[in-house]
Each structure stands twice: as C-alpha cells, then as structure tokens.
Amino acid sequence: MIAPPLWKVSVLLTKKEAPDVAAAFELTGPQAVLTTEEPFKDEAEVEALYAQMPDGDLLSKLAGKEVRVILLPDADWIKLSQEGLPPVRAGRFFVYGAHDQGKVPCGVIPMRIEAGMAFGTGHHETTALCLSVLSDLAKRRRFANVLDLGCGTGLLAIGAAKLWRRRVLASDIDPVAVAITRENAAANGEAPLVCAVTADGLTSPALTEAAPFDLIVANILAGPLTLLAPAIARALKPGGLLVLSGLLTWQENLVVSYYRPQGLILRTARRDGAWSALLLESSRRPR
Image 1 (spheres, rainbow, N blue to C red):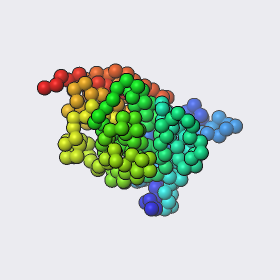
Image 2: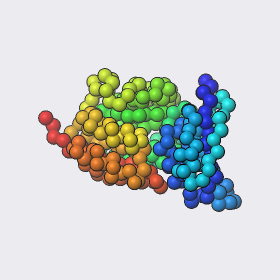
Image 3: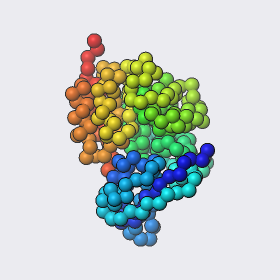
Image 4: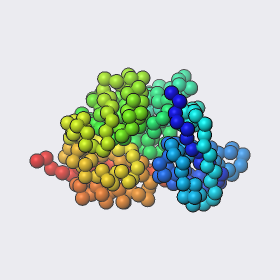
C-alpha cells in the first residue's frame, strides 16, 4: 500500500547536538524521526517525517539553526527510512526485521517487527525502555490482565503475551496501527493472545469491559499521559502496576504529579539519554 505524500524536515548538527534536537522533534507530532551520523566527521543529520506541512520556523527555533522542509513524492517513506536498522536487545527481548533473520541469538525472546506505518520497532529509546521494564517485572511477578494503551505496532503487547502467556488487550486511536498490531501478533505466533482494538483513550466498551487491569503499559507522549491520568488510574486494579513512557526526563515530575493524586506511587524511573520510563503502583485498597 502506498502511503500519502509526507513532508520531510532535515537539519545538519554536531553529533552532540543531535540527540536533543531529535528528542525535541519527537514532541511535534512526526510520523518518524531518524538520526544518521557521519563516521569520519563530527556531523549528524536529524530527519523527521510529517503527515502535514510542519511549522519550519518553530522547528528551526527548536534546532537552533535553519531546517530544510521538502514535500516527498508518494512512497512508504516511513518504512524506507527504517529498513535496514540493526536489531535491538532489550532485557530478554531481541527485536529484529526480516534482514536480520539469521542473527537471532540463543536464549532470547525473539520478536520480528517490520518497519511500517506505526510507531514501535524497538529502536526508539522509549520502546526499548518499556521492553526492559517488562522483562524485569517478569522475574518477580505474573500478570493475568494486561493493557497496551497506544499500542503502535503492538510490540509491547506481543512482548507481554510472550512473557506471561495470558490475554493482552492492545488499543490505539489509529486503525492502521491496530491492523498492523494484528498482523504482527499473527507473525509472531501470538494472535490468540493479543486482542487489538481501535479506541480513543479508555472509554471504548472493549476496554471498560476488560478492566480492571493488573498491568497497563502506555508508551505515549507526556501530554496525553497527563490528560488520561484519572481514567488510567480507574482502569488499574488496586496494587496493579503502570508503565509510562514516551516522556523526556525533565517531564518525569510533571507526569508523576498527575498520577500521585490518583493513588499511584512512583516505584522506579528508568532512563536512556533524554527519555524515561516510569513504573508506578496503585496504592488504592479494594472496595
């Protein structure tokens, strides 16, 4: 399927500047962000793809220098930009594409996820952080009812299904992401356990009927996480755990401040560069 035309923003930076600029671009609603480094120079290029024409002036201010904005011709540029990426090792998980089929090591939980139109190939720090948190949780606890809120490719839902061998509900506001989640669940042998639904927030009957959950994973941006705090807290069992990501390290206190009044306690924060994943526990008592 050919995707609609996309707008590409690109800017040349030093290697030290690139991670912060890429993190800032992530907050402006792109379809994908990619950083490439020149091996023999102190030079890196940050590119971001947008479904609609972005605000070049704003992006130039975020980057600290003028960015280039161009309209790309019809093509699945998100897939093309991500093809050939190296496999990702996060906790017990090994996430790879078809080009890495022969590189899967022994003793890992393999997940094959192809680059495509949804977020979540494992290469972004937030996805890898969430996989690492899930891997560690599996060492000490089992979960019977799991929700992957904002599932993207379904990578986290598939990972949870592989760890606990129980039903996992995956939801996303984007029906394309839901379709991709179903395809990936089938490709990884987890179609019977991963149920993917299109839902905006937690008001869908599919989610309200399945609640309360003993584990919720939400790898979305800080803004939606703060807005959804009351609904997420209500959907979590007393003593249940919540993994939040898609936020920058400086946004940790802001996000936690919305969940603390809902009876959630921060247990740990895991960081990778500018990005964070938070593990919270519901302190609410059963009624």
